[in-house]
Length: 304
Image (tube, rainbow, N blue to C red; front, side):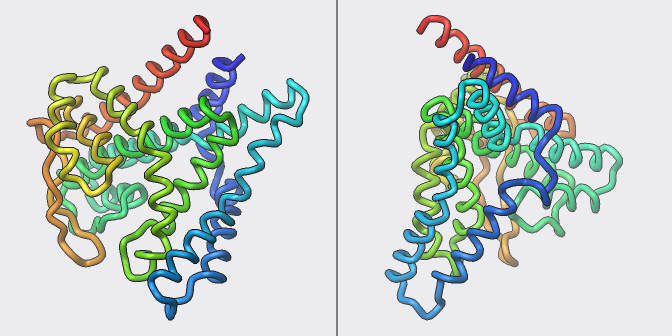
């Protein structure tokens, strides 16, 4: 039954993609998180009080995740449907693919302005000064990193704790995206959300990196992971992106603009500069890794 639940949730995601913004449960969650922020964050607070406020905000914000426990109260048929829907809402493989292919299509049409707009939907860096090569690199980096965040981490926590685990992870990851910035407003208030997301992502990120390595240029991926991951800011995105870049033998990273400042990010991965087709290769690597996870889960269930 477990593998059927996984397959149906992933099939729903592939066929339907994410719900439109107005109907996505995370929209309501975002309003809830914003309300908590307005109630608890005061710019006049000391750094310690802002951290404390952030801890309280994190705890309160995650309370809707308790809905994931409701499945245990339902009859078996309804519980199965509940599990499928929760996992469907928590993963975003199809949405990730669609965003990446929109960038690829704009580049194939040689419309750099549109490509910058499309990649701006999936990255936090400034896009107005991007070259075609910058757009390719940013898109591939986002696909590799979000493969871990939007596909494999929710699947991991679903396997470990059921819909409750997947839901808590997805809400935590959303909070990190909202509050996890290292700027004046969120440096202290967002500390708890960022650290909690790091904890939840630690093992799934490394399993994702290993999956990328096994399905691509394995030695290059492992070398990049070992030699380059520590050069990246994120303790979890580092292994994922470096292993993925090495698996694809692509040279990624490099300087990028954030909030009006040029950040000299490290180069990492392989030897080749990416072309348009490599964006599709990156999305294919995510889906191939997903197939590998499903195969291993099915084998594990059959031998359990």
